[in-house]
Length: 94
Image 1 (cartoon, one colour):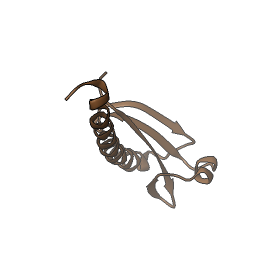
Image 2 (image 1 turned 90 degrees about the vertical axis):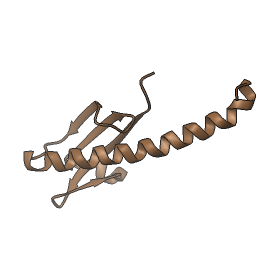
Image 3 (image 1 turned 180 degrees about the horizontal axis):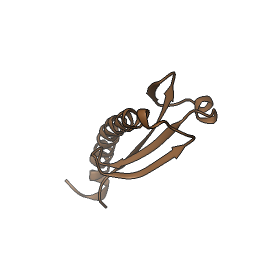
């Protein structure tokens, strides 16, 4: 296993990138990008564009999505480490 995958969807509202879109925002015709990375780094494993996105907004959206993936990864990594520590006695590991 290469690492933990984390993903984020970022859209453009009133010319500004936003992350963590609501279901209503996701069903609207907002331009949005879903991006996934491995271990919160720059190694992108998925990019999905929905609706048209002007080229002027692409770098802002990608940067916001990558930063959010890094934040999500940090939360996931902590949760996985806590779970593994809790399971260690059950598995007979130290």
